[in-house]
Length: 281
Image (cartoon, rainbow, N blue to C red; front, side):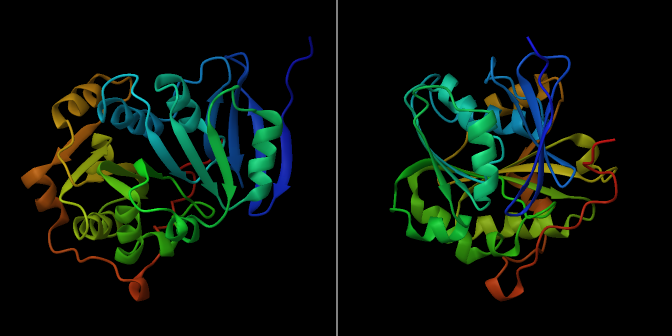
């Protein structure tokens, strides 16, 4: 049997490359313009390689009883890592994936097909445009992992956008976002303030070194109208191979400080990562 070989393709929004993992059979790394975007193990779809995807997986694990099917909307598709995770950990879930790069969706569908019966619908569309047309109270989870290059687009950072997310979620649903930043966290604080304008419950999950200002990195934000099981989430994050801190309540309000919600007219993309922050050496 021939060894798998890398696949490179120019898609609508960049140059995508699929690279086989030499240490795991049928596992692939997706990069877009050189930045790691997704990791998928076709034989073990519940395997989450990247730190931030593991943290998003922890939230998905604790938000409902194990195995219960959920209606999930993924804004940002990549190689469909988390849709695959939900399909195997919560069989019968109905999922929508919204990805602006149609060429990327086609590449992934061709080389990394979804398992039979995954119930995942793929939509080539702008995340906010699609969200504004989605039915009210139609999702249990709305997961935002959208990047244009290495930055979160400005139009996905405002109160108007978050209100659309709140409209689409059911009362017990949660909004999850993967956001990059570094000290002094102007972007992250403003995003928490923006979410607080719509959702009563907020949780922040991040690697301690990032929160201490030692490096640029990803933070996972969790927002909902009902309390999240913070105790269970804290246990999972602490016991992970890549331990993380979970902030909520008074500590998180102190972190937000005087940050203000973002209006459409003031919205900016997430900060540019420093050279080498997420690149492949």
